[in-house]
Length: 248
Image 1 (cartoon, rainbow, N blue to C red):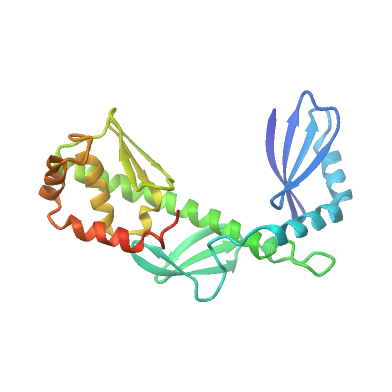
Image 2: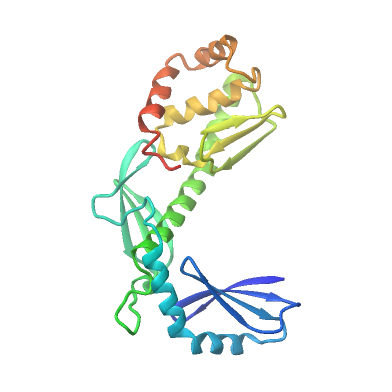
């Protein structure tokens, strides 16, 4: 089976080829179009087929736009989001390329022109909820990319200071924890830590490094944390205060 991302005029679709399939099939799910086709059908024929079904696809996308619940990223002029402990305005703009840039007090989210195009019946192809989902994805990718640089850097610094070296480090999204350390010495860090100030990031990093010596939260563990970060309780309080505002 082979999957390929294809763009046709203002409609994106994912092409999935299969040896077992004998006919072309269309699916619209959560506003995303998937075309399933056998290997012997060439892409020109598939493009023409999608074009023939264009209005049906647009109608399906529009219907699903109305059914999707709005995500947490609301495209409003006053919507603020935390980055490194500071509030940043999410500013969505038309751009030649998809992406996010940090600019003083803003997170500028660039969306290509097709996200602002209208369909022949006067409706926007990508209604508010689908645009918000794209913004959520782009912002999430931006935080991950930033985390892969900063969190690794802070981990290396504190490993040198403490003399506690993990066997590996994993940067990913977690829903219910900021970090973890297992018996194999692997430290995992949540990339949404990029929402936090640097001292809070350092607390989570040191916390997980200290688990390399104590895999519990015993008095010995907290004494070790306190040895390196005497004011660690302030970072804990910040996390407790802002955890509901941070991405889940």
